[in-house]
Structure formats: structure tokens, C-alpha cells
Amino acid sequence: MLTDQELKKLQNTALNIRESIIKMLVKAGSGHSAGPLGLADVLTALYFGGVLRQSAIEPQAENRDRFVLSCGHVCPVLYATLAEAGYFPKEELLTLRALNSRLQGHPHFGSLPGIENTSGPLGQGLSQAIGMALAARLKKASWRVYCLLSEGDCEEGQTWEAAMLAGREKLANLTAIVDRNHIQIDGFTETIMPLEPLKEKFESFAWQVLEVDGHNFEQIIDAFNLAQAIHEKPTVIIAHTIPGRGVDFMENKFEWHGKPPTEKEAETALKELENLRTLQGQIRVE
Image (cartoon, rainbow, N blue to C red; front, top):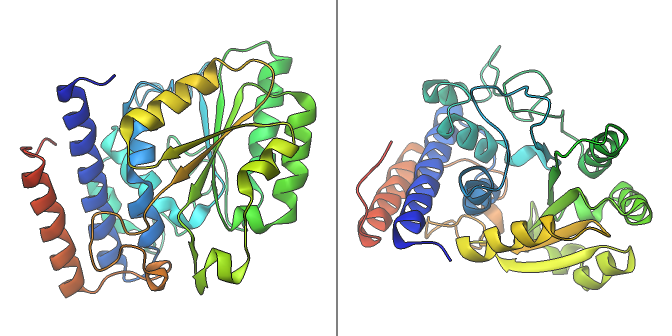
């Protein structure tokens, strides 16, 4: 159980990340809004909830846990999270998608500390993560691999080939997270390309499946901790999230999957997030 102070700190951090996402996107004039906002709580739990064994002080430490972003288009939330954690200056966030910036529209390996893989075409991340997990096994290393998948990744055949291999190899040091927000660029997933029964599909590939409210910090952190205690198979956490979380006019609107806010919309969004901070009884903590 999280203490009230711990919960408020996580909530505050997630709000900081959401505010950074809005500021990045409006400055860039392009990029994805809904997914990054919806994932802020999951990444906050991972990086600030005592789950991921990483440090901005030594980002290339051999024994670090690896985080693989398969759905590269949601990179604003990863960039904002890494900056919040001190991997690089927050001021650099405003160079998102700019020419010669280290923060491109899809991350590439080596561009920034904390970026473990190059991502672009959906469906490749789980294969990359499995390679890392197998490497850890060969080295008899204790580090774990976490891989974030979108629903679009789960519509790609390569993801299921990779899932089959992970199950066969019993890669217990691998935890996948599926962002189950039910939208994609041109509609709702269950209309465009139904994914259900998603839980049973992963189970049939010999995975342990956990389902959580992707905005409940206790549920998310408990699931990550439980995954670490499972020793005979890989684990996937299906995180049910609200796309555009925290910004009322974006929430559950598939139209916001792949577009940024205008300056006026960004101003409204930032006011909503600040009001949410006030409702939670918080004072801004940088």
C-alpha cells in the first residue's frame, strides 16, 4: 500500500509529465497527444514507483533494467519521463521533432541516455526486448526487460511470433505492458481491428496475464512487483488507460491519436491539468 505522501508524489510527477507533453507538442506543431497523456501514470509508476532499476547518474550501468518502447509514436511521454527523472535537461523537451534535435518523432538508440532501442514500424519492440532478455539469461545477469506495446503492435504478426518464442523460452525476466486504450488513428480498435479476447490470446502463448487500471498507481506497481515474483513464464500487464487522460476535450477521442493541440487548446489543457493539481490538494513540485 502506498502512503498518502507517496501517492501524492506520484500524482504530482504524472501531472508534471502531462504538462511537459502538452508544451512539447504545441511547440513542435506535430505529434501524438492521446497515447502519451494516457500513459503518463504507467511510466510514472515504472520510473518513480521503485520498479525500474535505472539511474540517470549512470544510465549505461551494466546491471540496469532495460525499457523498450515498441510504439515509438508515443515517445513524448518517454522523453518527458526521462527529463523528469534527470536524464537530460527539461528545456530540451521543447526541441521535439525539430531539425537536428535529439528528440525525434520516433526514438533511436544512442540519441539520448535512457533510450534502449530504435523504434518506428510497429511490431518490432517485443522481438528487441526478447533479445535483451535472452542476453541477460546467457550472462546470468539479474536485470529485467520491460517492453511497452500499443494496440497497434498487437495488430502486427511479428508481435505474436515474438510472444510465441518468449513463452517457449519461459522468459520470466521479461514483462510486457499493453496500452489498452481502445483507439487507433482512424477509429476504435474493436471496430477497425478487434483485439479481444486479448487476455486469452497471450495466455495461449504461455504468458502470465495481469490486468490493471492504468491510472491506479497501486494496481500498476503491484502488478510490476508480482511480475518479478513469477519465475516460470513471461508476464504481460494489460493496462486499461484513457487516451488523452487529464484533458477533458481529448479523453476517449480517437481524433487526438495523432495530432497536437493548437496554442489555444494547449492553454486550455494546461489550465485543466493545473486545476487537477489543485483538486488533488497538491503544490507544484519540480
